[in-house]
Amino acid sequence: MITIISKIELEENNNLLYTEVGYTEDQNVTDSLNIQYDETLGQFLAKNRTKLQNKTITISDFFVEVSFVYEARTMVNEIDKLDLKEIKTLNDL
Image (cartoon, rainbow, N blue to C red):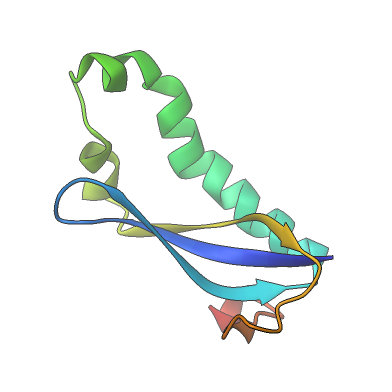
């Protein structure tokens, strides 16, 4: 299975921007990226769900210290029409 890697960053209007930056067939790369996501942005969202809904904090509060995170959760069977580079190690990002 092929996994698409997305870069998640904050746009100027406080919306999240998801950009597909590559793909991997290596489960270790996928797992590592998703662990990093879960320990950063994922954890922030989970801990602050109510505050985000009540608008006592915003998603931009997370991105003050972290400029972007990667996520690798979209799985596809082929990438023929996508212009993405293969990510074999985390250093390829």
